[in-house]
Length: 175
Image (cartoon, rainbow, N blue to C red; front, side, top):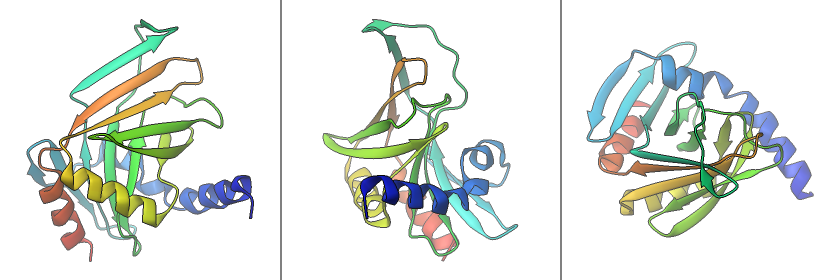
């Protein structure tokens, strides 16, 4: 199977999980716990889902290597549990990503590539999700770098304080 075919299959599978992605994470009022810089949410319907989410501590937007003023929606890094998933890592950039681009997730020096669709980026597999979560448990910060459809490069820095406690809480609630 080609990389393009794999990416297409992943996008199709993830489309089924779109009700649990950034819109839900942004709008839910069902926060059940907080652990330093991370919050835990649970939704019971239409099917039970749990997620942890954090906003960046710092954001840098550049165009042609120079700081740029841009308008972005909510910027979120999260891990979601639903329908038997083992924890899906996602990033909402607050803008449409450049077509066919990827996002770099740097967790305390360990780098991962996330694929993009519209305003969201995901890891390519459950194995990648597990590796990212393990790195985030051991790390102190996560830096997400992406490129918008307009050519703006964004660099968002997230604290990982409370990540492990929040992740364990969400995993326990959605077993």
